[in-house]
Amino acid sequence: MQRFSTRRLCAAAMLLALGLLLPQIFHMVGGRPAASVFSPMHLPVLICGLLLGPLYGAAVGLLTPILSALLTGMPPAAILPFMVCELTAYGLTAGALSRRFPLYPALLGAQITGRLVYALALFAGGALFGMDCAAPASVITSVVTGLPGILLQLALAPVLTRALARALPGLSADARLI
Image (cartoon, rainbow, N blue to C red; front, side, top):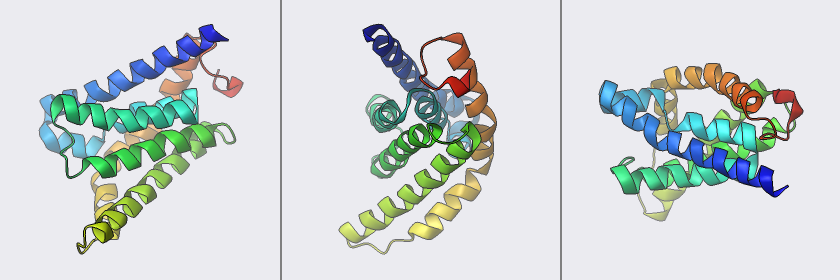
């Protein structure tokens, strides 16, 4: 059992590293707007949840934006708490739903839950700091702006999750992935 725990921890670390690297590549190639449109940090977190389960998914979702902010300054401090909430929800929900549902419904449910958590975090942050909060408008704007990234996630996350499950036997406890 320890061997599989080590393997899963290494896979989570790899996906965390990918979550740090992909946004930098998008920033270099397409500038800051490319990262906003494609949300490259989200993909490794979703894959982690789908592949390794809710605890690893939540941990990678929590750590990825924090480490990215510390190492690269992105996301900015004003956005960081909201992204932490959103990505943690993505990883946790993707992992929890993938145990009960096929990959595509689990992924879609995680994306919806993450956006709802983002909206709630914006609303709570606005209430906490006494600011007029436009959480619904901000979430709608982020969904519309990020639609190419959402579609990319829907296309790539299940394929890459299955490929990793096949390439690294014993990584996922979910036999449906193989």
